[in-house]
Amino acid sequence: MINEILGKSYTGKEKIEFRPNEHFLDQQDDANRERITDTNFTIWERKKKKYHLGCESSLPDGRMTIRLFEYDA
Image (cartoon, rainbow, N blue to C red; front, side, top):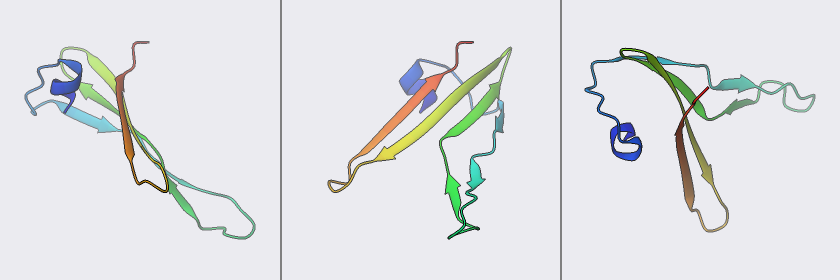
C-alpha cells in the first residue's frame, strides 16, 4: 500500500517498528475502557522513514476515510 500510494519501492524485507497505539482512558464511570488510535510506524531501510496511518468512519453512512502520510521532519 505504501509503495502504491506514496511511490516507494519497499520489498517487504525492511525492518518495521510500530509505535504503541492502544491507550486506556481514565474515566470514573468506565475505568478500564481501551481506545485504539491511529498507527505510527517506522520503516528502516538506508535511512529511517516514519509513517502515519489513520482510519475514520462516519456514521450513519458507514464511509471510511483512510489517511497515510510520511513524516517529513
